[in-house]
Length: 304
Image 1 (tube, rainbow, N blue to C red):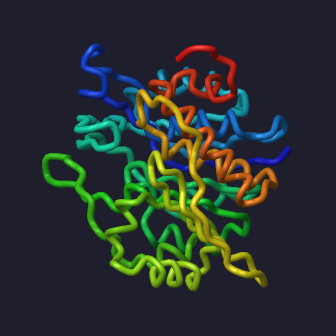
Image 2 (tube, rainbow, N blue to C red; image 1 turned 120 degrees about the vertical axis):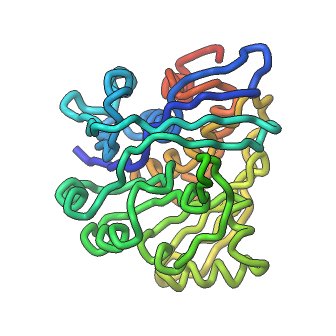
């Protein structure tokens, strides 16, 4: 049975201003969106292998969430650590803009921990939810020690953290070194802008470092991609998503990346995987939260 690893952080979201009628909403966020999307997108015979640590205060709730996922085998577990789980306070300024404040202390992975856990995987999806999931040294060891395809959403590597926990956008240092660790890299439009005024030069730098597929998510505009398969011409395009009446864009990038990674691992072409990812992200935007999202993405739920 083929296996795909999912590495990231489970986050307890406290959400303000998404819907004034609801008031403050608390629910699972972070890698929970990716797990739900992966569960919906994988072929029946694939397993999800979680490479996810969870704080002791949320371990029971995390286990309950895991049991809702069809591709999560009965023996699989999140790794409980003796610290408070990561919590993010989200304050929405518009449908697609928000302020984030993070608390909690779930530690990242080192190579001694991670190395034995990836040996029997067929593919790996890495989502930097906190930005502290692993250091660059561990990522380089992962690239050298794991020969399967690695899809990485670099999201929170671009977020610094002030003393009060507020996350702020910042350029990513040693970006070429980070690029060299992954086969596919996902950024969003704002993150791309931090890297300079010449996106083509940046794309060439990425491809030169070993990235074969660069996905830049553009919110409601879809995704721009550059694909450089070995021995073939470079392809680039903008793929628009289906139009939807969005009610909540939280987690859409996580849904996009996990769906794309799942479909690439399953053998879809790049454009097929990206179209499926666009469709899943658009559908996710019409649903609130990660709980039961997998069923909704599969079309099992009639209403959000």
